[in-house]
Image 1 (tube, rainbow, N blue to C red):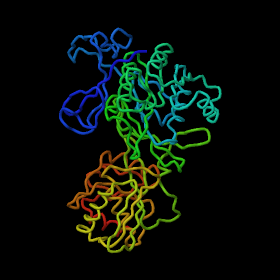
Image 2 (spheres, helix red, strand yellow; image 1 turned 90 degrees about the horizontal axis):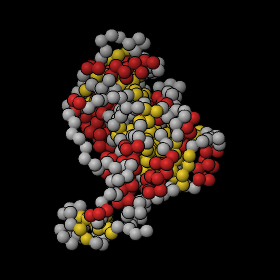
Image 3 (cartoon, one colour; image 1 turned 135 degrees about the vertical axis):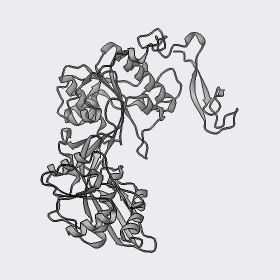
Image 4 (cartoon, rainbow, N blue to C red; image 1 turned 180 degrees about the vertical axis):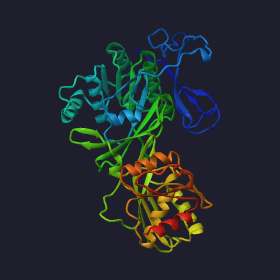
Length: 459
């Protein structure tokens, strides 16, 4: 089979060269050459011209007001937590990119979802480039899916995969993984930047033109980011990240990007002998079961997408040396240093000569600033060896001037805390509800020193 010639194009100046060089011969920039295809004029149809995936024909220009807007059609995956992250289900013609550490459960979850969709009457296709069909069948036996009718294709060549998708016409197709797929149009090895970008572009076009929902599994780097070019995340409609410690039974699936639902939504799963199972009450796994209140512990009501979660923040303040350590797990380290400075300046709580360790229980990662107040109260509790009251929760952002700022959707946070049996809350004054919440004593504060005074009065 003859291949089109390849050229290497400079990302800085756009110059080309017939072979890869470390330095661009035109602008002298280093490591800027990427592989591209040099196509003859008569063969400029690799993007689908003349095929069922043609997207390059001229389209009529239509005013926005004349375009009929309708709700997207969704298919429930049969796994409630996954549907929550996707925004209600799998969208027809949508492209989902799922990444996560090796062995965390990506293939397991997708195989379970395909089996549920198959039982619902939707044709499915599982394309595996990393395992043989026998290995996939062996995993299905372990998951209790020995009678599954999911169609399996062990293939890595893009052209054969697209031909199979066109012949089988599944409603949902999983590509596991995009880094193993290669196109004959390019000479580079599978997993290279050019191959990943090209294969993902063709699969995305196929999904949009045929209405097949595509799920692409992606590898991650040592830092936990999706491997491959950043354009990969821009191409797809939804980006999901699998989070969690492989030594723990719990996994989180977080939506980083979603054109059809809420961003930063999470689904919580427990790994069992029969695969992944959704956790209906995820707050329970983020709360330690102390028989009595202990110093250094404060429960935070955080918001993950549309779901309020109760997470225990633990702090340990211990005597340090000339260079005290500041370590945070699940929270931003730089923000911890800032909060310690605010705590000293505006509340008179000095930790300059102390080691400070802060941890979000359960392996959850909290990025919202509404955790500030709970972190500061937990640190103060550990430093003074005084436990916060039983059934105590807090949330609120703390500014550099010591003010306590409101958190979004405070009413939902308070209702979730009351539902789980918490009785005392310290919150920003702007989040104070107009009507009392049954069973919850609310203390609304404007400044951090006021919050400290309230806590001392409760103790």
